Amino acid sequence: MNDFRAQIARRRGEIQEAIDRVLDSGWFILGPEVEAFERELAAFVGAPHAVGVGNGMDAITLALEALGVGPGHEVITTPNSAFATALAVVRAGATPVFVDVDAETCALDPSRVAAALTPRTKAILPVHIYGHPFDMDAVASFGVPVVGDAAQAHGARLRGRDVAGFGAATAYSFYPTKNLGALGDGGAVVTADGALAQDVRRRRDYGQAERYRHVALGINSRLDELQAAILRVKLRHLADDNGRRRAIAARYHQHLAGLPLLLPRAPADGESVWHLYTVRTPRRDELQAFLRAEGVTTLVHYPIIIPQQPALAHLGYRPGQLPVAERCAAELLSLPTDPALEDGRIDAVAQVVRRFFAQ
Image (cartoon, rainbow, N blue to C red; front, side, top):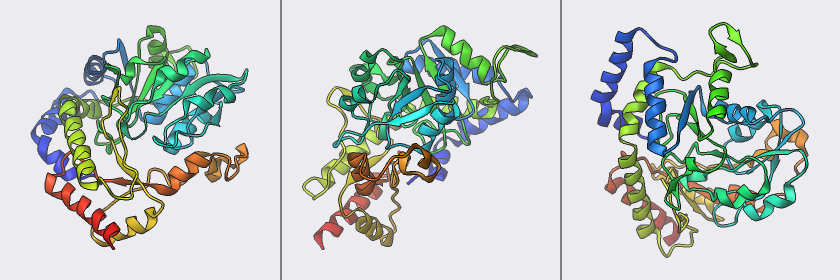
């Protein structure tokens, strides 16, 4: 799914230079590399503020806490995402409320949100799943803050604007598999709200307003200098890498057209960054096994919807309660989209898929 050695080989000189710069500086936590990366990320997405944090889950948690989300509150979100999306809500002290997804996109269905609102609803947390921009405006009219989970959507755009330009805040992960991936963990909160950004800055560093003066009950979630320096290198190439992912998606579209597969598509008024290329078929498990036997690695994002995870059994969600999300979980299969993959390898994957359906 991800050829990290090939990715690093393409940028090794620049990455090594960045690492050496940090080693020579003797500064490893919240220093000039983090500050520079924050400025460059904010400029890339067109937002006033970016705050580097330890990982993507912390980015969501800190953004929610900065908005006042806490015990007794509810946050509406999607059941089809990485577990970290909901875990961030729980870590903020709130309760995740799951709304079923759209049958075509497997993203949060905006038409179902209104019925889930209660006086305890403090935020809505949509996910720009698989790199496709979610229509944030569709849930912006309910009178509660909207925080976008853009862990898979670095550089995705909707109606001419980066997804970071919508909502109260946007949370990013820089886990190595992401479009903008570090060589370790990392995350960021992006926002147009200066006060919110300042609150996140304090909370990420034990709640310090200044050294040894703690004004909030924060955590230790500080992006380190090495990862920031590496991310600065990768950010310079992100637009090109996203363009390569779009070319890979177009190639899959061409090769897989006409098969009994539901192919993914970007919204007509948006620009996906194709973090994943997800096909859907009721024969998903058979197809995955066939691909594996032919040497093709695939993954399922995600095989168990979040409210059916054992750790959240206390919320009481029952099988059949979120039928569309359950169908997505049973049918989705992610094909390789690593931008380091050459056309011949993408073509070979597609041909194996075609052979499966020709049996």
